[in-house]
Length: 158
Image (cartoon, rainbow, N blue to C red):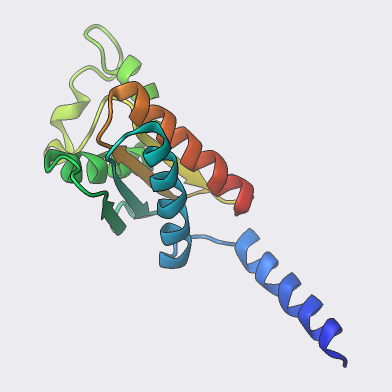
């Protein structure tokens, strides 16, 4: 085999492995966090970016310089919420309003459920939740936009 054939085979195998990804990896989390932090910097947001695996456990948390201390736990909990409930936290906010079906859910799971935007579940090519992204540090709309951006670039590259 020549080097071009070997490179083609290896590239195809790596692509296939990404397609079959069934849990978040550190390499994928690092790549995602860097892209989200770049976008946050463009927006003027000092964000904390958290990525959880499919079990809701943190794979990575990165804090931009001068980000809010409180954003650390909030970003982690947004990621946890999105993977635990398999939905964006902005969607949960509507379901958790007084009189809505999930009113009070934020008081469950030891207070780790977040009912405002900034968390997104991350899916593999087959549509299975393999982790989640949580972003905190800006306004709710900024966090929601950053998390949606992260989800989009993750799923395009996955």
